[in-house]
Image (tube, rainbow, N blue to C red; front, side, top):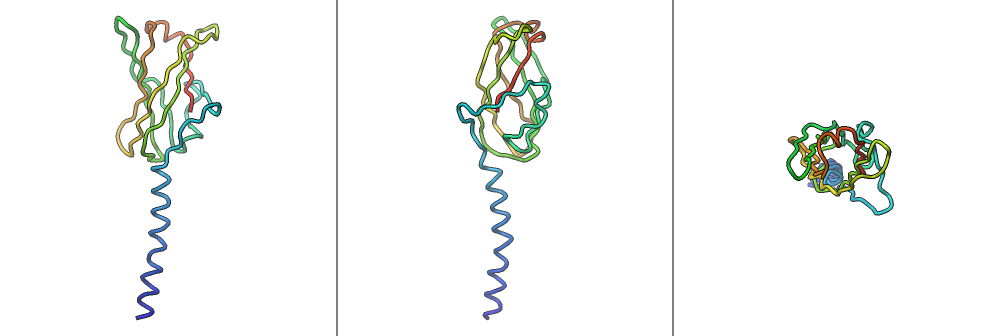
Length: 135
């Protein structure tokens, strides 16, 4: 009987490591003011602040009478789950800040994930601008 109790307690050890790794997936770190790292969109392939997050780039641009909606696809290799605030900045070709916005990134373990934001300029202005994402 003592041997059975000991074996059942030993069987709980793998459960502990599984639960610890699952908890890390659900514990998505949030932005801290003053500690935001901005990455130009063309260089934001792998985000170090969120391990396993990969930015693929702009997938859709649609223009309306009020401005332009931009969708940026993100891959979640780390299977993180939760919400995270992301900042975006749009710079003119001269390097001046045109617009800044806050985006909520809703991380799911499966399925496509998009960062979607609204730019008040035209699609032509956006095409000549540089976009930086802050994580």
